[in-house]
Image (cartoon, rainbow, N blue to C red; front, side):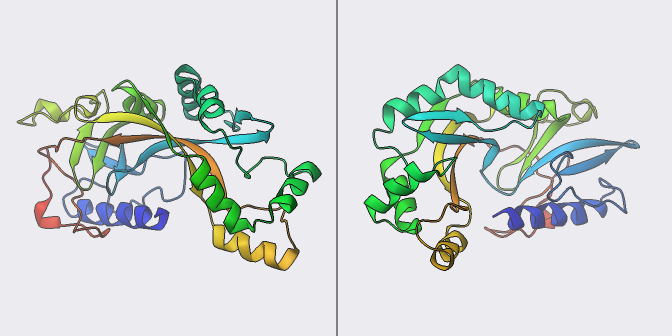
Length: 263
């Protein structure tokens, strides 16, 4: 999925170069987390734009299980946007709801000590079976968020524009390039066009590779488990914008250049 996202970014940049909306020598952010996905080039200045190929998540933070029904938010690494997510999690009571709703403790655990290893041995479950156990026992938890949450998150990273390939182009609060001085109709505000939720779930992060490692190193593996608990902002019920700077072809990362509509 991540590679598809990077390919979408590259394809949007290529298409917009032909329309002078991106600098000729520009390269998208790719895996770099400290840059916007795309910098659109308007009147001699660049402005950050977040790109999503389709309806997806918008920022995530790991949650650690410590054993004995104890949980904590993962390291924010001193990053303001990660601190923002942590504060949202605190406000909606994520950790308390996990403790109350997840009656069976997951096998995924931050520190896999001898007590953890003994529990796994008693269960007799392989790594993939532990993953399936946790998926079944720890169902997704959903929390409603204020409409401005996603815009506020990207504003921290000085990003004020968003394009969702399947739905179009939006403002994330401000309009620093002044596009709405000329756009008729105006570019819609993202906060008015979607429903924001916070989702806590068991997320795969390479289960097959971790399973192979357990087979080679011995049962139970105290190394990488191939999955984790994540808390992520997501969006749904998105209303379509009249503009789209990177419309996708079907489910691919290709751009339907004839369907690009610039403000």
